[in-house]
Length: 172
Image (cartoon, rainbow, N blue to C red; front, side, top):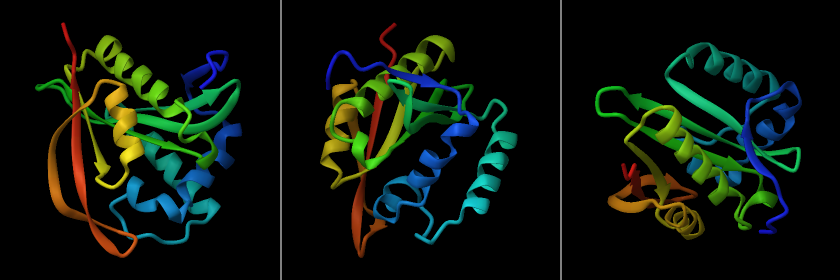
């Protein structure tokens, strides 16, 4: 990844809809992003889903668009906050052309810092398909460690896959 690229997290704007829809309708990566069965998605259904997520989000999740040099390339979110134990889960999704060049690692590092510093979260965790080695490496690069494995827990493109649970703790 070139150091001249400006990777930042920002709030969603109306102009981001097409990119976010493109990610959401991508059947090739569906199982990495959702436990629901893959199915075609239309624009109106997705628009309704975004509006519902916004309405339900108050205090339950924090969602950002991943922006590279002024262009939306994905989204990253914190969700399932536990106020007592001070932890939250993180999820990320990128368009295909943004994968594999450090953008995801940078975005994950930024959302983890946001969680620790701005949300006073003590632990951030995630789940990843066991065969998604590039994602596991990106999460490890951001400081996550493998905490466990749910064997054959997900049905992905015609076969059972392990779910790898990863986490990172705030150091102070």
